Image 1 (cartoon, rainbow, N blue to C red):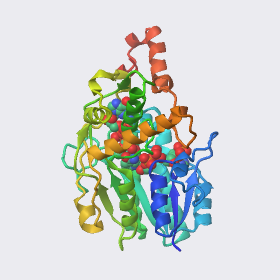
Image 2: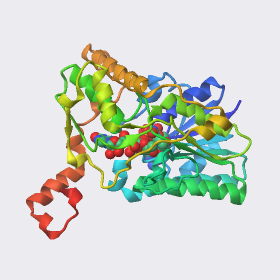
Image 3: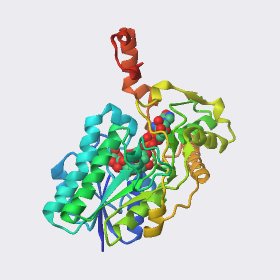
Image 4: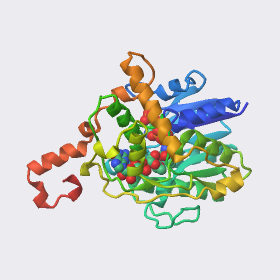
Length: 366
Ligand code: NAP
Ligand code: F7E
């Protein structure tokens, strides 16, 4: 029986990947962080929490990673754990660097020292292309990161390449473009929109404040993307692959489609809030999945419109069940209103009151 270790099994991709590997007959181990409130709702939603072996580990703690590898003794490691929210990486650049850059190097070092034949999957990202103007982006497109998140992930991308060439470690980078699902975190724009659309439709929310509406993203469906991760690990040689749909849509289009799915006009509800703009954003991402199609035989099926409908339907169903008094694993009821929890907005108001703007503090605080 093959054994796989998935870091970040409590996130969006981890449970879908675990489900796929279980179907393929793997013994699946997953790392989770010790948190004050347990966070297994996605594994529960897919009904697999009892089928995976959970190991406590943190990417900042080398000994816990060594322990996880020793316990699981895997043929394949999928390193999905990350501080994955680009917006937060501007607020926590050092933490993001420790987890998203050094975290993967810790695993590569463990594999090197144990001298084990372990295949390593690194969750790389379309954010690496950041400021690149080439459309569509392909594997040779110059990588110009536009956030601390992307810079940290670029470090990991190169460390995989370097360990591959220096020590023959089978480390592959999956350069995945945005992929979404009903299990997406609520802070990401797609799920933020579909959760709000459901609440607005049911009279539980009045409007939807968003940041920059013009960035364009290549959005795919997460369950299809985890299949590509597994396919990469089955290749005789490690390599880097873009996983994308080849289509790009603006944030405003996602909002328009999501409101239209419940018969509403997005312009009646979406508010523009400058506080939600990032200090630096990525304008347009559109990936070419040609190499993945040719080498891995991987092709996306779910279209942009289908993706939006899947997500809206899931959130609408959840809020209706909630109103009917049903109990089920879910994140939204415990989620604070975003505008209440963004610390930099509090800072902004405090600074404005103190008249600090004149003293040259950065514009983003105002
Ligand atoms: P996600 O939902 O944010 O999940 C991230 C996972 O990492 C969670 O399980 C989280 O644990 C864990 N984690 C965070 N900090 C950690 C730490 N210090 N030590 C151990 N675990 C930690 O992300 P995702 O959407 O599933 O994405 C999976 C990976 O692919 C990430 O590396 C992301 O950067 C990358 N990626 C995602 C996309 C996308 O569109 N989804 C595209 C390209 C690349 P908690 O549950 O405890 O927070
Ligand atoms: O933002 C804009 C925002 O946070 C998408 C991660 O999985 O994919 C994800 O990163 C766009 C940005 O995802 C709001 O400014 C407007 O231009 O959903 P997002 P992301 O930054 O693309 C990549 C591939 C990853 O690797 C990451 O881990 O939407 N936007 N208004 C907003 N974004 C958010 N979150 N909230 C808003 O209100």
